[in-house]
Image (spheres, rainbow, N blue to C red):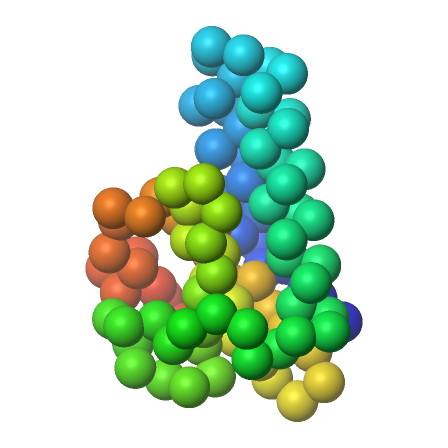
Length: 97
């Protein structure tokens, strides 16, 4: 089961708001594609790569557009920790929530 952390939900909201300044339609499209891609984690928990800043095999990432979907596998669930722009360093914002 894929669960979204509160910080990750806030990330989605911020991404939507940023893109919506130019195009609400495109903003919704990007959010929908991020959500669709995250659902694949239900079946493919080991997809993606280990987050280089953290070097923890349970914390992985997949990419969509210029965004990194960062998630942690814990027992039977996957928790989305963050959705950040690819140029941002995740370790500087990760607080272990």
